[in-house]
Amino acid sequence: MKYPESVEKLIQCFEAFPGIGIKSAERMAIFMLSKMSKEEALGFSKAIEEVVLDIKKCPKCGLFTDQDLCEVCSDDTRQKTIMIVENSKDVLAFEKVGIYKGQYHVLDGCISPLNGVGPDDINLESLFLRINKDVITEIILALPSTISGEMTALYIKKMLEKS
Image (cartoon, rainbow, N blue to C red; front, side, top):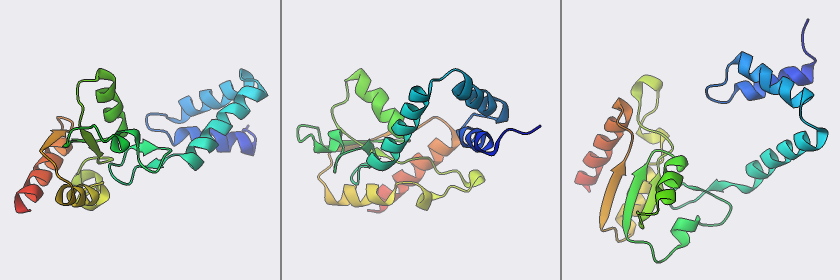
C-alpha cells in the first residue's frame, strides 16, 4: 500500500533536508498528520512561506537578513576586521559569545573538489571585491579544521597575496 500522493510529496520534502533519510521523513510526515492540529500545521507552512519570501542574503557579507543590509553590516560601530566563516550559523555562534566586534563574511561552504565545489561555487568573489574596496585592518579565517576548510583557507591566502 502506498501513501496518498500529497503525503508522498510531504515525505519527499522532509527527505530533502540534510541528515533526514526516508524513515525519518516518513516519521515527520506521520507526526504532522496525526499529532499536529490543522492550525499548527498551517502555522508551520506559513513560517516556511515567510522565510522563503522575506529572507535573503546580505549583499555585503552573505548573512541571512530581512533588511537591505544585515544587522552587522548596518552597524557603523563595528571594527574594520572581517572574520571569514563557512555559514550563517557560525556568525550566530560568534555573536552569542559577544567577544568579537568586527564584521563577517559568509562563504556558504568550503572548496571541496571531491564534492564538485570549486572557488566559483562559494561566496568568494564578493569577499575579494569587498577587501579591495573597503578599509580592512585585519582578516580572520574561522573555517573548519577539515581538508576542505584548510583548502579554502589556503586558496584565500594565495588570492590575498596576489592582490
